[in-house]
Length: 221
Image (cartoon, rainbow, N blue to C red; front, side, top):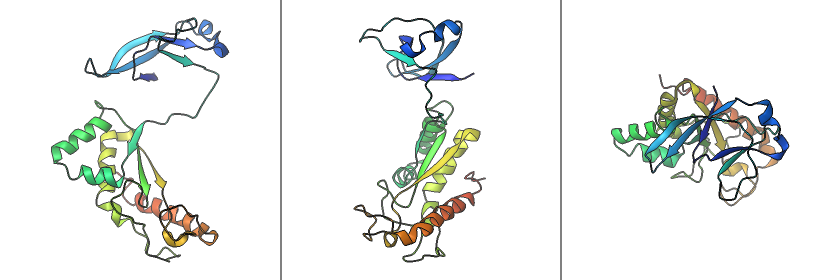
């Protein structure tokens, strides 16, 4: 059964004008409500089900969820957070009991239940130093390695995966290409990827993916 995750009080479920007859065809159908209420110290509490029913024009003071069943967006694969250099380095400066507390709070079944993890390829805004994975002007990428990530980021990603289990989804976001590939020869202040390095940068992606795959699917086992 699919769950409707709601982080605020639900006063009503409203079918908009484009789906005004939807409720008539789906009377008896329900949606499950999961509620988090800090004041009541409730976290992801099952509040039962609500029925789809006709509902008039709401007042401005009424909090409502509008459902347009014929209008589809992207499929939701999950909710999660980024494990950047900053978060991983800070994580490993904490005592073991605090590390477990954080993992449980974000990725545990009794916590937020995050299932998606993102990390950065090359240094980003949340890195304590600037780095890439190759030496300067190595167009063949023979020096490529992710040793930098093996100290903090990869171990934390593995811990998150253990906490999440089979629903773990992982992806990465690239930041700036190495400075020598760019028009301004800098990791910062804009610039663009030089035409002659298009293939090199594409191969860089592949190298990164394959190096992370060597981490035994990030399982750490």
